[in-house]
Every structure is written in structure tokens, then in C-alpha cells.
Length: 197
Image (cartoon, rainbow, N blue to C red; front, side):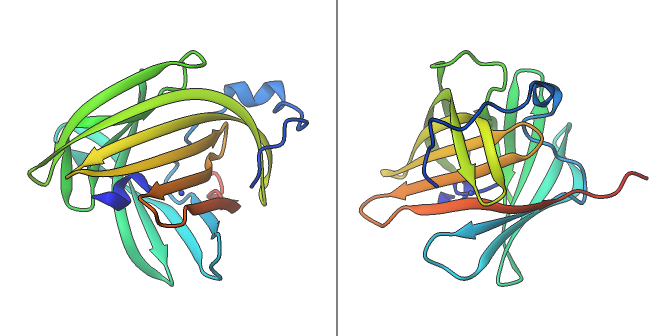
């Protein structure tokens, strides 16, 4: 379950201008089928590639199945849905998350916090989140981003994550901290969207 919060993934620069006003109309996590995000992984030559593969239901909820590949092999899948009150993860690999885990609230006020108790694969966990806004620069560009700082405790293991979401792009940067290990840093290098039909 640890990788559930590593996806479904640069230094902050305070002088970066805010994103253009028209970005406010773009979805914070676009999930059009066929969209592909390519991330650089700090201290690695390999790329972490996430694809919005297909629509699938988890229970009665329509979700988008995201497939993450490393070295061409699928290493993680998750089922995500954008609902009116937030972005939710309904399934990680083959395990449903009950209740579904809200990991971002696009309409939240700066500094808003929330806590979720969940179960997956027969194990219980707790997740705490706090949301703010920051400017960020990654290889794909400069953004005014919604930032979600999370702390997940499962089986006495604490995982801390910070995720930067940019309008029209989704996740552009993620930092994952697990114990004393060096942090895992993902930064968006490229994003491909399918041509309109």
C-alpha cells in the first residue's frame, strides 16, 4: 500500500509569476483517456510514466484507471475519480479503498486540513492532509500550484508526501518521505494529451 501515496509522483521559486487567469477554468486533475505524464525521478535515469488507461467502475463509481510504468513495466495501478467535493482514490492495484480517499480538494481554502480513516486489503490506516498554494518550477514549466501535504500512517509506517497540482496538468511534482530513506522526488517532464475526436 505504500506506493498508493507515491503516485496514482525542483525548488520552489517565489518570483515565478502566477499562472494565467484562463488556467482557473482548467481541471486540476485532467483525466482524459489516453493522457500520458512522464516524470523525471531524482537520482535515476529511468522515467516514471503514468497513463490514463481506461474508464472502469469501482462499485457504482465511474473511475479512470491510471497505470504507472517504470522501465516499460506496469508497477502500480490506481482508480481515481474527480467528484464535486474533491479528487478521490477508490482503488490501489487490486485493493479497494474504503471509504474512498480524498487526496485533494480543488475548492479548499488555503490552509484547509482534513483527516480520513480508511481500510484497504484488510488493513486500517489514517491519512491527514493540508492544502495550500505555491509557485513551482519543473522541467515541463512554471506553475501556480495547489499543494497538498499529506501524512499517511499504516501498519505503524508513516509516509509523508507533498504533491503539487497545476491546472490543466494534474500532478507536476511530488516528494515522498518514508522513514530515514532519501526522499523520492518526481517532476513532470512531459505531458501528452490525445487529439480531439
